[in-house]
Amino acid sequence: MDTTPLGHNVALSERAYRIRRNAVRMGEVQGQGYIGQALDIADVLATAYFHAMRYRPEDPEWEERDRFLLSNGHYAIALYAALIEAGIIPEEELETYGSDGSRLPMSGMAAYTPGMEMSGGSLGLGLSIAVGIGLGLKRKNSTSRVYTLFSDGELDEGSVWEAIMSAAHWKLDNLIGIVDVNNQQADGPSTQVMAFEPLVDKLEAFGWHVQRINGNNLDAVVAAFDTARGDVGPKPRMIVCDTRMGCGVPFLEAREKNHFIRVDAHEWQLALDALDAGRTA
Image 1 (cartoon, rainbow, N blue to C red):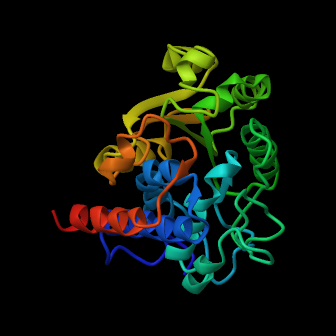
Image 2 (image 1 turned 135 degrees about the horizontal axis):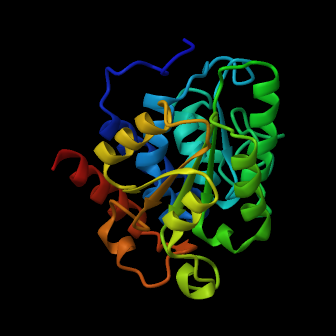
């Protein structure tokens, strides 16, 4: 299958639920991890992999695929959860998450994991790599798109803004950036570490087509992806997603510090129960 993968027989909300559940199950293997981010970005990943992107689960290196670059490598647990749901990685491998010899290391490594397009341990590089890939695809007259997920904390990096400027210069209308604005990074609230607002105005001034949405509202996410894939002129496209860390698990959402979460042994089942309750609500 080489278009919208696995069809539309299962609702996107069900895909997002399964992505969240896969991430929590992987987190339980280590007892900790970037669970808050995986829960907040699940709706975006569900839309990318089960509505928007073109790829073949059985052939992750298919030349005509759309590329999904994970710049924020610590979100790897979220992408693994989506790759498992997409059938690119076998579900049983989630039990190996972060373990020696696993294809699912805690930070994304392209050499280890099928479907992982870049290694993202150092932040601020994904958009620059996407510009290069986008240029290469253009020169090969490819119709493939490049999607790049990065975090609001990466807006601290000068390389991100150089990529923003160069993507507009090269009129890369095959590039769709997705920035996760959850206002959390290792050193504290992102907007306090380095103010980046008004973000939409800045991106538009650089020459991008920009949408800002609630990244935890599936209808809004789908509409934004559809617009970004449409004809908005010869310019790169950015979707600014405001999200909630820990979305779907209320007691994790409420934690003051949830950039890297340590979860007590009994709480993993509580997290799964919360997701199950939200699924049937």
